[in-house]
Image 1 (cartoon, rainbow, N blue to C red):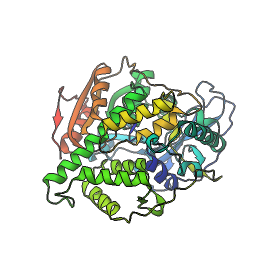
Image 2 (image 1 turned 135 degrees about the horizontal axis):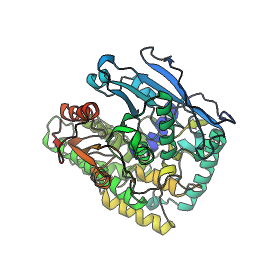
Image 3 (image 1 turned 90 degrees about the vertical axis):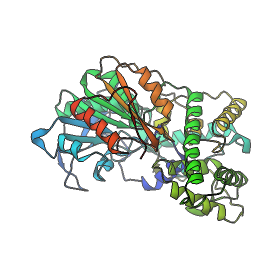
Image 4 (image 1 turned 90 degrees about the horizontal axis):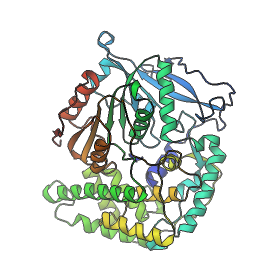
Length: 484
């Protein structure tokens, strides 16, 4: 999850809903012949310095002669063709992030890496230009109460999940059942065939590491190198996922609070930052905290946790102090929560991605309450991580995960490099240590700093990653890069 960034976020859900609305054909192409992967490169409409194309893949890889969709692909050609190493495929995170947009905006790769590789990325199936997952906008924007201590009911969430999933099927079609990381990995293999290369290198980040792990399981011999940055631990069950995410979020917040305590430039220096957050959480629970983007909308407890955690991604500690001050200064007037109801208008939403790859078992109301209290114990200040909302919804999703959690089954891959920050709010460091221990012939490089994503944090992290991708030189075991 970011998971990156996971990928999992109700404001990441709701903020992305408006921004990610894109026109798209809602019914897939219904080709009846097995697609042959090809690429017809042309200058990208948004920026003619890049090449764009599509590769046709089946919606269901078990039915290769069935309906198809087109996957949007982008290429940034090597700046120094005479010294080109090969092709580097960048797998975006999210879930729901656009690899095409990442490159169009300049990407995050060093000049040396851009000189030595054709860098190729894509919008994964269900994302933006690749037949976006679309569900009812009203249901996506307004959720039922997901806090059991505040009257939340699991049976209401189950009813909502059925209705929401039905709206996704209505607006997206059959693709809604084939959004898992394994299907994306097979799309990446079709891309490799279309590129006409025997092997390629892969950089993956956050939820993109889910695609990378699935690809390494299926096609290890096609990898020249594989770098996983801020890695997801797909071996976790739902309870373990909740607990580790909560600990990671709490750790990142504690680091922010420690900075504020020692650094006089912090606008909240000399105050109890943990208590300030606790007071805001209580106000959110009482319905007297306003959404800063919409004063007529209530900011609930999960919304508050998500807003704070998002600031910890970069991290943007000064920005977080401004947020907390502004929220604390609001008048404590009640805000009416909007009703959960269909709007009839489709909106791009990332929920089904999570439900396709993870399994969250919640037996009944009492079990849900127990898991909520476990989450609170793991994150005594934040009380909850954004993963709670996504996992609760997926626990009620009407179709089973197509790619359920399991330990990585990777055999025959080249040496793999894992990079992770010590204080990552979305991909906890403990995930990276476990994944590196589970995958044969893998090495963990630790960035002793903060934020989500480590490749471009410091010259140390960038140089180590570049030496691996360009020269296949793995850092020594237990290598650490100092915090910026």
